[in-house]
Image 1 (cartoon, rainbow, N blue to C red):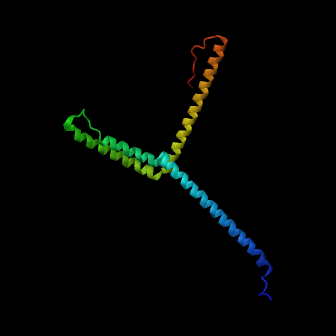
Image 2: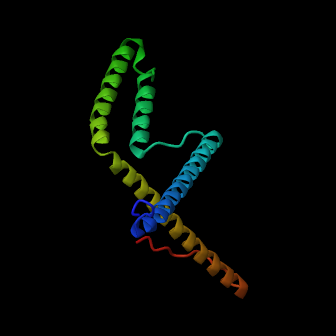
Image 3: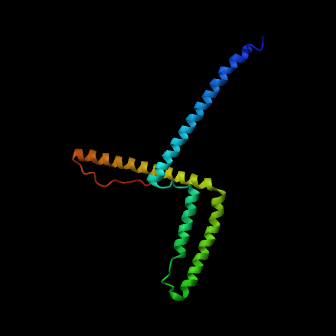
Length: 160
């Protein structure tokens, strides 16, 4: 008789397991669909705007490489044809030393450059906000005085 009917707790577990399986499948389908949409959006943006910029450390490395390339290819007309090759060699050597000094710092601390770039962006936003607020005060003051028929004249600005 025990073979004919499953135990009562087994009957309770089967639907729950099936529901969990359906939920897991639904969650996986949702995650898959979101990932596909995200990849499609990234591809669309790459075609529209080009490749995204790398991390701040990668961008600094590119900058150092480009500056080194430009300095190495720079011809010095002031030194003449005799000192030119020696000056170019000296510039190349200085550039290589600078790259050798910068590379280990970038390798050890790539996140620091991301934080510095973010901090620079925040400082720029704060500066813009301060300048816009000051411009609004100036324009309001000028408008108020002009409405009264007075000349606003020069304004003393406290730089501290």
